[in-house]
Image (spheres, chains in turn red, cyan):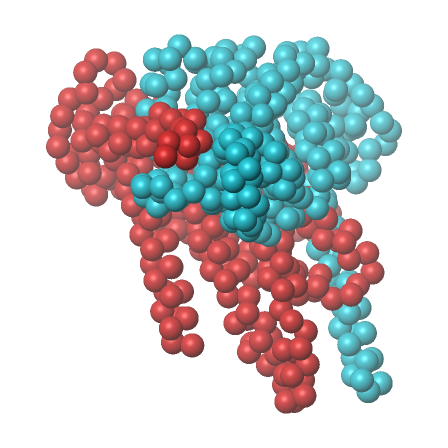
Length: 284
Length: 278
């Protein structure tokens, strides 16, 4: 029967041309030395050897992990708290939900632009506020110390609404009778949260963990617009480093090698999480 | 419920509400600040003490940005790319998602996992090979060159498959027994049942393409082919950005998304909640 193949043909053709082949080509070129001009020169695993000894690669990896550590658990925790509060019967509840959700439709470029303006050293509203409160100005984006925290704060603004929506859907699917049963057994609010809510939103937690880690390892637009990876290399993530190697210093082979390493890292994380979640389910 | 329990519950409600309102102010403030900067008189933007409200409304930033830059051309490019991409992507992803949901064929699982695996590839890894393929096709600096590489969308296929699995097989089988062709079944039976997921797909695809940055940044180098995010990046990247102009363009870039947000919020929430996509 040819019908199914016919139906998926347009998609598979595009995927092959623009995802599968490029990925294979990236792996191939990662074993070469190439500047986009002339023939790629086979150098076996030397790009990968260089990567191991490249302090900037390790810096970018450390930045990526720091950024993930600063954004993933925090956005998920705040998202869960918001979902718990917004699941109660409150005045103007759906309007409040909308406000937390709004940043999700704003492009990363617009978000980064607005954030760069608000964090501006001289004319930014945050420093104006600090001065008015009697504190001294902070060089948010121009100091290597504050640039990453500024990025993390901006990311939280974008991500908490997303986590809130996913958790809210999970909370709404918990039957009320579980809570009634727990109350009859004399469980306190904290006990109900720990032994009813948390276990039942676990699939949502798992989904959010996977997606948030992928998001934090992929984040590019926001950083490109807000800090450009600087000052110095203080906010250069692995994806920034790949982009820089490919389009600024024209080291296609090396850029591809870093890319393959990042892809392996993301796949590894996902498989690890998947295993952990399966094991946790078997234990319970 | 006892009076004490009722009272403590109302107290918790009140505390939650106050915290939520305070948080909501923080959430809305950046959007407000963009708006306030965009409509401020120019002199007021670079005062050391930031005034919360503009002293009076001024359209000078919008006027300046529209005359200094080819903003309307950028809007035009963004609209063409987003609309064509929506038509193309939604159609082929519905077809593909339907096939993965309702047909058994050799190679199905392998293909499905390959597509899921593609989700995790950082786009920066693909940028160089994609750039080579698109330039080989002669599509650099063209709308099609931006549209085609992103037309097959793994999240969309995943979402459609998830939805269409729940369409009863009996309906499709009955139509087949009546002698309906496969395309007829897809258009007459499956699509009318899939209106909610089509709406979700249309909205998300529009949002993704409207907001896209990394790939257009590589594929479009000619200023007159820029999309709005590229234009915004151009303005913001100037040595001394005129923040009033930048915020005016940011506000313009946000308008379609704000309209979609106000009109179709239910579908956005549904899309995120059902598959965890953004």
